[in-house]
Image 1: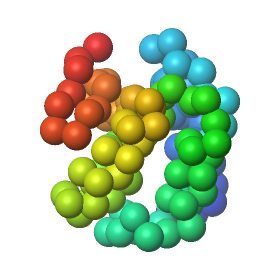
Image 2 (image 1 turned 180 degrees about the vertical axis):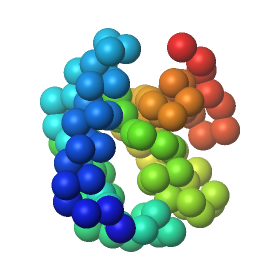
Image 3 (image 1 turned 90 degrees about the vertical axis):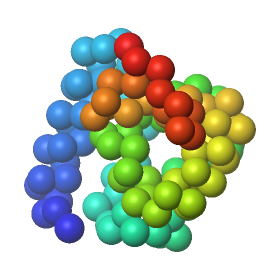
Image 4 (image 1 turned 30 degrees about the vertical axis):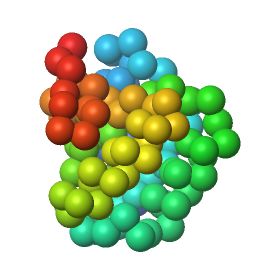
Length: 104
């Protein structure tokens, strides 16, 4: 796990990077937990936000920060995409739809 200073610094870097490609981050969920499972408080918070909001894009530093478990990742991506939300992966600079990526 990262220290809070590192987490906050990374959050600022990610927001700046997203803004540089035209994506404004209105709300941030910080998750410094292990990405071995989607069953963690920050992922539940994220899904609650996406379910009640009208966000169209979820910006992630790395798609595998959602979870490193391939089956759970596919399930989460389906859930997020079914809400009408596109996942934008800063690591690859692409929109992610399950196994498909659209390069920018």
